[in-house]
Image (cartoon, rainbow, N blue to C red; front, side, top):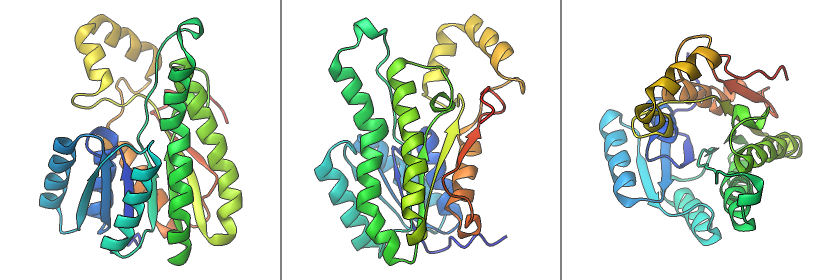
Length: 257
């Protein structure tokens, strides 16, 4: 099936490894031009080189912190200039400051919300005029099953829930502009160098217990399984899907909404 993505332009945050890198590859495989960013130059350069080797699509990389307004603006402007416009924004970068409430200073909350909520808000605002100029497009926010139900660190749960809420309201605002806004809510995803791989190496007994209680399929998810959902939502063929939150979790989550 032709997904209508060939030649279009996608921007992806936190795309040097793991989920973001898998998303960049999946979109590039569909013929999209891809602009990625991350905070580490070596990782960005490696991702660009690998993505360029694996397909004929143009891939460009930027080094910077999406929580910084100056970098976000420069990344958007340079992407539009170098690739001719913007059609898809994927807000993938995220993280958390773990701890109990009494142990979390205001700065921990601010840091997490800056990354998980305010950076996507800013990038959506910066990219929207470019998407509208192209006749519409897609904004995909990577939330979490723990934005739909309780779980994970306090700062993570609260900020991802806020991101889900932002997505729903922005979808209603942007619908007249033919810009679709959706959330993907991954469950626990394992990949080389990721958090879950490190946790399981340190405590194999926890891995067995965690999987037996939380994963009906008997395993954690893979980055490419989330990436395929991103491709679907990026495609113009998903023209009537907006304001949605799509779990990609192998039934790990327990929310019925």
